[in-house]
Length: 110
Image (cartoon, rainbow, N blue to C red; front, side, top):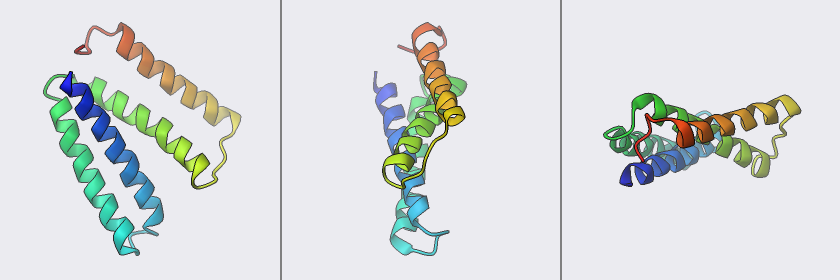
């Protein structure tokens, strides 16, 4: 069960790091830049624990898929970035793929 907690922590850290990257202004602002670097290091650290139990392809699919969905929501809510219909359809397909992996794949450690 802890492998899912580690994966969730990795996803949250990655989303925080990506959000901080937007605020860093190409690493010209110290605090957002530092938060970005620390968050990405933490994301990889926590992902390494998830990889002890869950196959790398599954971890990466869930990590990247959830990260895309969450950062798209943050982009819309925080950065006022719009998403067109193809983007929303693509995000829905990513969510569907993560659900399929988690519910049907025998590769996932439950």
